[in-house]
Length: 188
Image (cartoon, rainbow, N blue to C red; front, side, top):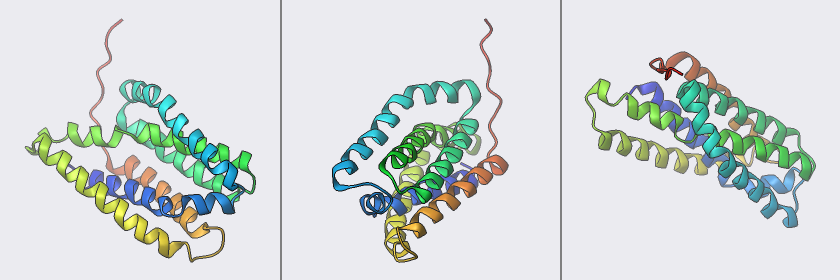
């Protein structure tokens, strides 16, 4: 498994951890209310569920790298909208974008790592174990970092800004460092 894919996988999970630790508070600061937080999280979850299958089809047709690039772009857009939000309706847009980004990222970078396991003589167990370690480390460090970042500025802008920056970095790392074998297209 390529080192850049490992870094990308770690950063993806770091980003999740950074906002997960303060998500409800950030939503409250950006236009949500106690009454709308559950609805907003529900919109995010529903978006992920509805987009999961179409995003998988997209990855099969256009490639896993392209799918992850789209995910990073949607994540950046989501955090940009969240950054300026002051109303629950705008928050809803941010969470739909984030849910779409999550659906397009789920499995795309993992599948690339698994596809490349054979190139390096690594077993599927080795790759999935490495991915699990990177995921746990990213989420844990992100949660700790999220607490620290919440003290930077007001309205959790430190958390949101760092996440937007991570998604820009993910986009460029993926575009430059990830190589995917061309996909065979079935003949009609």
